[in-house]
Length: 330
Image (tube, rainbow, N blue to C red):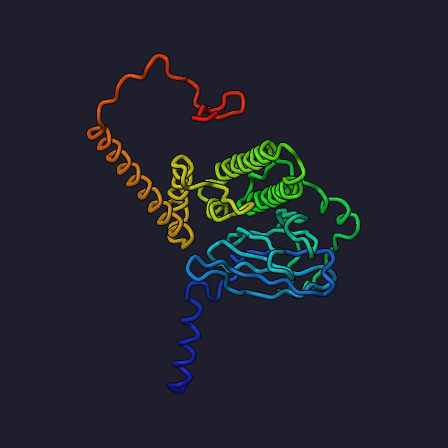
């Protein structure tokens, strides 16, 4: 054996022992059954905590079928996109997990259903969809692809299914907020009670956001230590965040999730960055609270003594029409 041949052989052996190389037993799989694809491609990305979305694969569907492989050394957060930029699903996938994803190509998120894949399911060729199996067909398209997830039946068996459920709930809330905003825009100059209409619309949107936040908290509790809080904390619905970080109570909840995530996913870049950011936000809030307390104390010490209010002074502070302010000349 020549020296160059020996070096080549040793180099090959070293590759077998590198992390993430030469071992495919822990790769995850997502088998795709997609309606209305028309031979188009789906793009598969990994979301990096440092650099954003990294392209992994492009899957051209055959008869509506395809396969995604989840890297065994991946960080757990991925995006599946079809066509338009907004037509996407965020997938929380761990190495070794196997799922069946059924959806319609042009509306991936609203029609998606993610279910665990049995171990006995046949293996498939990457990105080709050439293996056997049945396509969803018309019954599937007219059945589950139109179903609405029931909040009472939120999936608790995996972060991937919980994340999909949350995204579908957020998508429905987004559409309802859009409808409420259109109602306000189209009618604010037509009605005599514009203020009442505005307050009604604002209350409806606040109610939707509270309901979505409540759902998000329950899902995070169902999936302790998962990356679900990272997805939820970065979600905007109607240009509003699901969790308002100006509220110390909501910040404390996300911070608790981040600490639990760090314990179960030590070394995961998403978990590390999320904990770092939440600790910074909480520290800033504590400093602001301390400054406000010091300011209040300073104002109390320097404020001159006030005279007691006259008993004949008016008690009402409103400027409503039935109690108008009295000005000279009225």
